[in-house]
Amino acid sequence: MARICKIVVAGVLACVAAAPALAQGHPEERLNTRLVGTHDLQGRSAYHPLPVEQGGRRILYVGHHAGEALNPLTGRVEVNGTSIVDVTDPARPVYLHHIPATGDAQGAQMVQVCSGADLPGADPGATYLLRANGNQSHELWDVSNPADPAFVTTVATMGHTPDGEQNTHKNWWECDTGIAYLIGTVDGWRAPRVVQAFDLSNPSAPRRIRDFSLDGVQPDASGPVPGGSGVHEVVPLGERLYLSYGTSRNGVLQIVDRERFLRGDPRAAGPLASSPSGLRFPQIGRLDLPFFWGAHTAFPLVDVELADYAPNRDQRTRDFVVLVSESVANECQEARHVVFFVDLADATHPMPVSTFQVREADGGFCARGGRFGPHGTQWSMSAPFYKRLQVFSWFNAGMRVVDVRNPFDPTEVAYFIPATTENTDVRCVTIDGVERCKTAIQTNNVEVDDRGLIYLVDRANTGLHIVELTGPAAAILDE
Image (cartoon, rainbow, N blue to C red; front, side):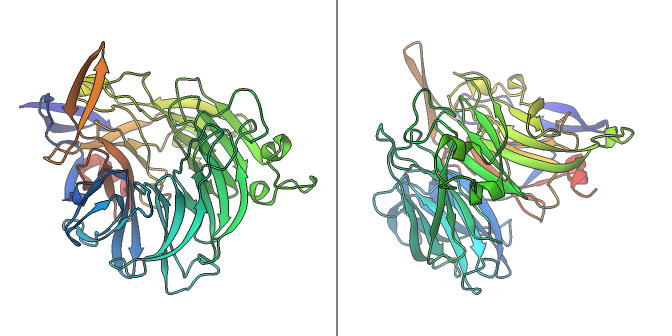
C-alpha cells in the first residue's frame, strides 16, 4: 500500500496510508485525524449535526433528508425527521429518540436548540428544539428530556411562489434574544427561500417580525429574480447579519445591519415594508458572484489578527467572510465549486482575496461517484476552533480541515474520509445517454465542539462519524 506525505504545518511532514480508489465504495482515508466513534443513525440520510451541552450530558441533534427507515426503538418504519443521540462518551454514541417529520412532511433537515434559561421569555427549566418540518413548516419541540420530546407549536407554515414552489431550509436561533431567522416560502414572493424573522423568546407564543430578501424578489417586483433560489441561510454575529443567496448558481453575499433589519426604516410609513427601499435599507455591502458559483454559507471570521501584518500601521486586524459555493452535480458534471475568503476591511465593498479547494487528482474524486466539492462549514464560533481551524464538508472527499489564521493563505492541515458501509447508498449519473451508479461517501455537514471533536454526517445513509485531530493539526488547537 502506498503512502502519501504532505508538508502541512511549519515544515512538519505528515504521512498516511492511502489505498487506490475503488469502483464500488472505498476504505477510510485520513490525515492528522483519528476516528473516535460512529453510529449508523438508523441508516437515514443525514443533513445537519448540532452538538449541545445539556444537563451535564453532550447531546447531538441530527436533521435528516427525506426518506424513511426502521426505528429499532419503536419497531416501526418512520419517516425521516430528527435523531437525538447521546455523545457524552464519543466512543459509544447512544441513540435516544427519533422525532419523525409530522403531517405529510418528509425529512427535517435543520435543527437549532436553545435552553429556556437563556431565552428571555421561556421556562428556565426547559430546553427547546427548533426544526424545519419538511417543506411544510417550522416547528418547536420541548426536548428537556431528549429521550421523550414533546411538541410545542408550529412557528410558521410555508406558502407558495407564483410557480407553486414550496420550501424550507436552514435556520438560526439567537438564544440570548430569542430572535430566529427562518428560511422558507412566503406566498407571492418570487423565490422559494425568503428570510422569515420571528421573535421566539417565548416559544409558546411566536411573533413574526418581518419577511426579507433581495430587492427584486418581493411579490410586486418584475424582471430577473436575483439570488437564484433565494436565501440559503442567515448567520448573525454582533451587529451584522451575513446572508447567502443561491446555493450553487447566481450567488450573492449580503452583509446587513442587524438593528436596521429588525427595526426597519424609521422614515418610512411602513418601516418593515417589503418595498425596494425597505429591502435595501439595512444593507451594508453586497458581493455578486458569477452565475456558475453560489453562496451556500457565509461564515464570519471577525477581528482576525494577521501575524504577518504586524509591521503595518493600518488594518493589521481585519474581518473576513468564509463563503462556500455548493457542489450539486454527481461526478463533476458542473463547474468546479470552491470556498472563497472574502475581505471585509471595507465592508461596503467585500473583496475575495483567496480560495480553498481540494485537488481532484489527490483522490480521483470525480470518478468515485456522487458529488465532489464543498457543501458547508462548521457554524460554531467558539474555542478552540474559531479563527484557527475551519472545518468543511466536501461530499466524497469527506471532511477537510483548513488553517485560517491567515485567510489570505488558507492551508489544509487535516482530512478524514469515512469508509463506505453496507448502508452507503449509490449515486447515479447519466453521461452521453449512459447511466452509471457508484457507492461513495457523501459527507454533508460538519460541526465542532469545545472538546475539540468534529461531527460528520453522511447524505448517503452512512451515518455519524466523530473525529479528533492528531499531530500538527491538533497542536494548532492548543496554541
